[in-house]
Image (cartoon, rainbow, N blue to C red):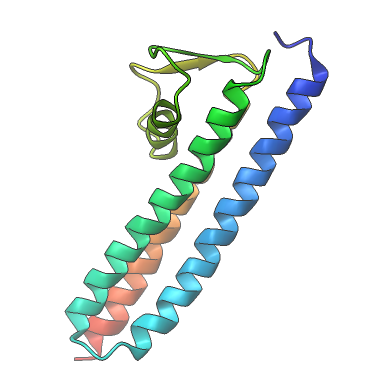
Length: 148
């Protein structure tokens, strides 16, 4: 399974692409959100609430980016397999992505083969993006709650 270097390189390339896309989405999303929350004409607490919802949506988009990468790669011969499902179906790949991104880890769905590189990287970037979001929300809460 690991002997096919073109597939291994494809997994690495898809991983780098998904990672770059998610970091860019997150960065630009937080920049947009910060500016939007400042201009929003509502209560300070409601701004924080909107921030939480927006950050949650950012993470959903990022989970889908990795999920689509999983799904696409799993449909390529020698890239790996997913155990615990009858697929690989798109929503199974999204579920795998959600458990990996949130660092819950493998449970009922596991992967083997070169695609594990994508999963390992997704766990790391998920942890980084989630903590980045927590830091962002903390700073927004401090700014808006202190402003009253």
